[in-house]
Length: 151
Image 1: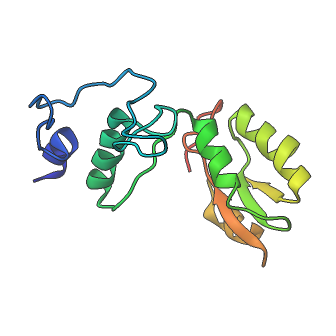
Image 2: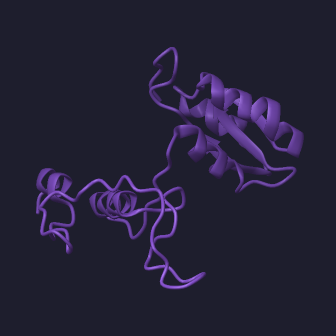
Image 3: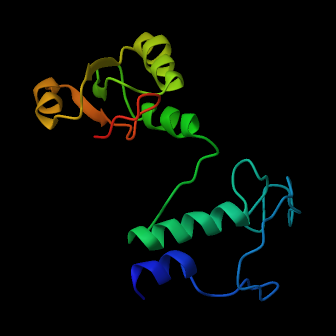
C-alpha cells in the first residue's frame, strides 16, 4: 500500500467482534476479569483499552515501527520522557517551549539534578554547540508554542 492508503486503512482487518471496518471507540472504564489478577487483555482504561491499542498499532504501522505508545496529553508524554533521565544528565532544549513544559523542566526536573541548556534550535549549530559530555537528550518542539518557530 502507498502511504496515503496505509494512513487511512492501517491494519486493514475488521473488528473481530463486530466486523466493523472502522474500529469502535470503547468508552468503558473497567473490564471483566477472568479471576483476580487475570484479565482478558484489559483491566482498566487508564492503563490501556482496545481503542488506544488500535491507535498505537495503526501509528506504528504508518511509521514502519514495531511499537507505539499513545498518551492522553503532551505533558504526560513529556513527563514520561523526563523519567528516562537521571541526576547529572543534561538536556539541550529549544528556547521557546510550551509553558507547561518549561515549568516541568525548570520547577521540577532541576530539583532532581537534571540540567537544561536553552538554545535557538532554528540553527542546528546552536544545538550542536550546546551538547556536553553528559547530554542525554535534545528536546525540540516544532512548531513552538506560542511563537510558532519551526526547527
